[in-house]
Each structure stands twice: as C-alpha cells, then as structure tokens.
Length: 492
Image (cartoon, rainbow, N blue to C red; front, side, top):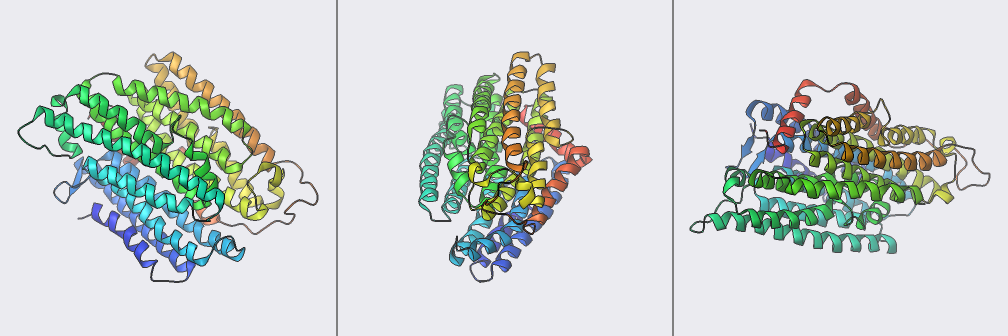
C-alpha cells in the first residue's frame, strides 16, 4: 500500500484546486480535508514503520523511518488546525478591509504547498532533494509572511528571504561537502546521494570534509530553524505574518529545519564517533535559551514575545539532542510534539486579539482581555501555562525528562544552565500574559464588548490533544518515539 506518495500529493492537489474555486469557505474546507487525510495516512505510516522499521517507495527515493513518521504526524496536526482556524480568520479580515479576496486565495493556495514541501523534507531520502524541499518551504512561507502587503510585512519578508537564502546557500555547501566526502573515498565511481546509503558507508567518509559539512549545515539549517544568533528574522516574520501562518512557522516549520540538521548530526556522529556535532548543538542550544529570556521580558508586541518563546523552545530541543542520553533525546522528541500542539493555540488567540483591538502592542490592548474575549483568553491562558512548563501539561513532562536525563548522565552543569534559562523564560512569559489577560479594563478602550468566540474548533483540537497526550501516550506512539530516539543516538 502506497502511503508516502499520497502524503505528498494530497496537499498539492488541494492547493491546485483552490485556484479553481472562489468561496473562501470552500478553500478552507479543502485544506481541512487534505490535512485530515494526511493525518490518517500518517497514522497508517506509524503502523508500517513500527512493523518494518523503514518504509520506502519509488526505489528508495522516498523513505520514512521513525523520525520521519513522527514529523509527518506533527505537520499534519498543526496544518489541520491551521486550516480549521483560517476560514473564519480571513472572513473577518476581508470584512474589515485588511486583506483582499485575491490575497486570501493566495493564502489557501500557498498553505497546502507549504505543507507539501514540509512533507517532502521529511520523506525525501536524497540529501539534495531534502535541501531543495527546505528551499521550497522558505519560498512559499515568505510569500505568506508578506500577505498583508504592508510596509512592515514586506520588510519582514525581505529580511526573511535574505537571511533564509543565505542560510540555505550555506546548507547547500554543507550538502555538497557530504557528497565530496563520499567521492573522496570512492574516486572511481559516483556514490549515491541517498541518506540511507551515506549511513551505510559512514565509516568510510572523509572525516575532515564531513566536519566541514556539518558546520555549514549547522549555520545554514540553524538559520532556518531560528537558532541564535541567526534568529533575527524570526520575531519580525512572526509578528507580521497572518496568525495561521505564524502558527505553522512556529509549530512545525522551525522543526523541519531542525530535522534536516539532525540528519547531518546523525551522519557526522556515525562517521566520527565523537562529540564534535553534539558540542556545536549544545552551544547553540544553550545560547538560544539564554538569549530568549531577556527579550521575552522586554517585549512590547504580543507576537514578537511568542516568537522569542519559540526561540527558547528550539534551543531546549537542540540541547536535549546534544546531551545525547536516551532519556534526553526522548525528552527532546517529546518536547517537539508538545510544543507543536501548544504554540499554534497562542498564535490563534493572538490573531483574535489583533482583530479585536487592531493592534498587537501591549499598551494598546491593555489589561483585562479576559473580560472582552473570555474564550480566547482562557485558551491563551491554558496554552501559556503549558508553554512555561507547568503541570499537568506535557511540556512540564518533556522539560523534566531532559533535566533528569542530563543529571542521570552526570552532566550537572549543563542541566543547571538549562534550569536557569527555563526559570528566566518562565518569569518573563508569566508576567507578560498575566498583565495582558488579567486585571480591570480601562474605560474608553478600543474594545469594550465581549465577542463571540472564534477559532474554537482549532484551539479545542490542539488543547484537547495536548491534555490527552500529557497524561497518556499510546503504546504505538511511545514505541515510535523510542525508535526515533535510538536512531538519533546511534543505537539503532
């Protein structure tokens, strides 16, 4: 049974069909249908991966292991929720004159293409195709960032495309160096560029070229992942993009770049049998966490604050992988999933707030959002508590798993640094959201009447999934995560 090919084709068809229809609700329904189908296919893929280890199609051109299957689930879930939210969101924007119907069509065409590109990143066996797919996601997402066609959104999109293109050019150099490392050991024949082949001959690759390849890939894909200090595009793009796009950027797009970087990390570790790549991941991960905390505290724009929160979480995920114990790697994979369920809810709530108060600035919105948008405020409060790592939410479990794994592997100093960074971000986000949601509203503010709740199905889907999987992980999902952790840790 073919699974990988339909996962790629279904969103592509949905995007093309959106060119032929006019009603935004029909376009949104096509997106919901497409990503609902890919989620079902992703669940079927999990069963096949658990049974067979690796699923391949088209003579190995497409390949899925446990890590790929995990990413397919995350992309499908976040994209499904985004499609559920986007319909009503753009209806309100069109009614307010913030965007034209043509731009709305552009969103519903580009978003499934964006999703298809992310699927190709995680399903492509060829490292060159993987790079091209990451480039494709960057091109589609930069058009989504510029959707409102304002000066500030165009400026953010321009910064995104410049830094992203520079980063991907460096990632291409890293990809070329990997191929050169294989060619140097086999000068009489051209080796395959498939990742599976590279892993099979990892011990024969030129170690010096592979070190150089990883450094280029780290800077290149790290830029796309938003790792500090290459993160400067991140707060601008998140604050100017439509909220559904911000949800996809933060929820899964950053993790797609991390996935590509992980493939290089796994290959480098298999070749060198050293801590070379882990040292870089640890340094950039900790730096990202510590840089995020003060910027969270001083932010005056809601979505920029959420963007810096994403920087902190991406840094934690990198640090978990770098610690390289089975427990920390498992915790980092778990954190990817819980963060993917949490962060879109915050951006959906921010979208509702923006459309009500016509601003994302804290001074304009003022305190007491709970009185104006009670349902949105409750959803934001729950997601905010999850994002700062409070129980019973899963991010508390994943953070505790990484910390306990670090301590168990006698990496006490790193574990202490992680805890300090987490506490700093905890204080910053808690203060910002408490100031926004609670308190009495000032009279004569920009909004005084409670609105009907918007985006409830999308937020309920993600929050419900977050609460469910925080207290119960199905056995197949647990087995999948263990398989993926073994792959990253070199134990498969």
